[in-house]
Amino acid sequence: MDTDYEEFTVAQLKDFLRERELPVSGKKAELVARLSEDDDTPEAEEAPEEEMGEDDDFDDDDDNFFDDEWDDFHVARQKPVLDDSTISDIEVLKSQKKKQPAFRRQEWFRYRRLAKTGWRKPKGMQSSQRVNRKYRSPMARVGYRKIASVRGLHPSGFEEVMAHKPADLDGIDPERQAVRIGSRVGNRKRAQIHDRADDLGLRVLNRRRFERKGDLQ
Image 1: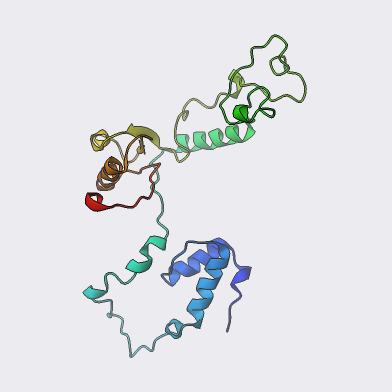
Image 2: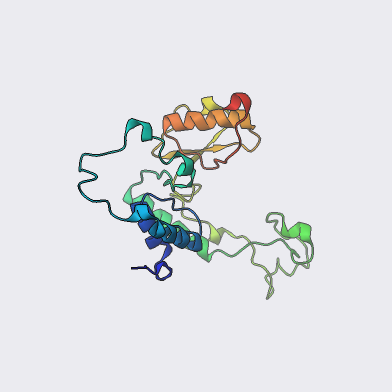
């Protein structure tokens, strides 16, 4: 009996894929096609009980059974260990950010270079934005300030710690703090920081993929 996977949600499709030990990455159309192909394969049929016993398992040589597609498997990101009060404060912070307008520079719509830069307070004597005339972008004011208890935290709840070399990872608490690598760090030192963070069980917030060549492997 053919199953119409289009009627299921993406979350339900991923649950089906996990049950079959298949990759869960991609868009909904790719997930549906992956499940349909698995249904068409003869291996999807249940094996008789006499062919495979309860104690049968993969041999030691089959440890790399899924190595070819291991990169496609979804890996849950590390979460911080937070108390109930901090979790509730983070929810308050998210609601505050949704209500905050986008602060634009004066005449950002007229000059492209102003639209790409950060906020600057208007100081002109006849500035329409400074005197709060209608249809002008709002100005940044003290009333838009967020809740103080979780101010400066990453959206996930981690406290960010800047790192420029592997030695900067010493003393970081993996339950409360996460690593952010400096923007000017090269791939050689970045690879060392990635390896060191994996050994210490730390999450790298701006981890990125790059090809390891030569002695970087």
